[in-house]
Figure 1 (spheres, helix red, strand yellow):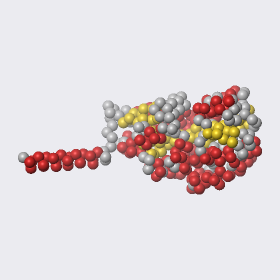
Figure 2 (spheres, rainbow, N blue to C red):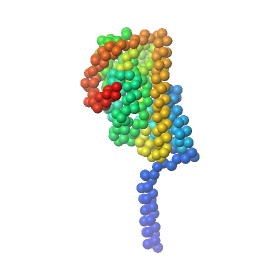
Figure 3 (cartoon, rainbow, N blue to C red):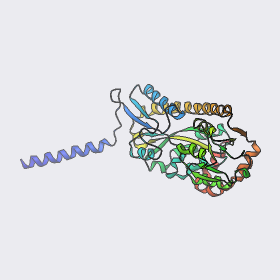
Figure 4 (cartoon, rainbow, N blue to C red):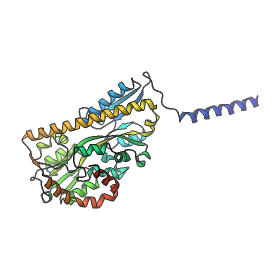
Length: 340
């Protein structure tokens, strides 16, 4: 009896060990009745460009997988805000986020490329980068993988432009003594320093009040952000400078992504590709509409900088490259420039 009991216990442990070791290799099983749930969290409204693209992505995933995968979109920071979503992705509490790329600087300083002045020539140049092998080195970097993160797409917002309340900004000397609202970041601090301007880190949602109250004189943003945040009500001048970028990237929890059956993951990737194409088109359309809205408001003087004036600003901003080229790496900076 004792011998039988001992054999039974040993057999039980062997069964459990086999089950545990095999479980890590199994892919998630998906069906219409038991679909794979992809939680997609983002911080903008459902009516924003990002929000519309996320909703379309969810529709496409359902269609392409025949209901075997389902994307649950949580817009407007319903689950996590700007400061929490990255940690939520790493921990697996959500499976997909689409933050501003500057949020990834804490994991890989090369993501500061987006703030480097006049790195991109035009919209075509930006899209060439998004589709390039050098972009893939960022999305699939070892530094992201070490945190169980993988990038799957770039979503755009647009070029940045300067606005202020003092006077038109055309030449480097025009910036001296003006204080700008800025996102957090050493590159942006160096940008305004090189122009002889001041800067203050102020949350996006608090910028309108800061401009209205005179806490800062100006800010930098895309046409769509300027328009939808109604900065034209509290600013007098806008220089079409195209000096930097505001863009997003879509990131997934790598362990979750790898756990999907290959046929399902392929369909989800197809859906992401189509949603990305839509997002790019929407971003372009919305920025164009917003520029017209700003002009038609009659409240802002719009200054179109000439190519020579842009070159003058770029020359004045060279110290930013002197300081940060090694941090962002010459390979990335030159790789982007060579895509022209």
